[in-house]
Image (cartoon, rainbow, N blue to C red; front, side, top):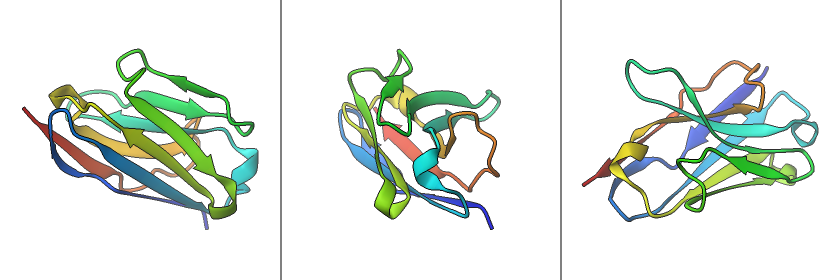
Length: 114
């Protein structure tokens, strides 16, 4: 059974940091390019960062220089280190493959207060 479980969200003040984790099961994790997405009410889900199976990373302009995506294939886990958080980073964060073809998990809420 394919499952994505995100964790690590919370309430943080602007300028603070959070580290999100996502554990994947039911897939050959190391073969997949992975990504973090985020969504706010009434808006489309936005691609935040990607990491290829080989470890190459790419970021949305809005988070470049502040967020870092990484992966641990042995743990089938992808991470998102978020620094210098801004109120506009407030969203539910999800992980998925870079193509977003797996069933979506429940996400993890990140709230940044000003």
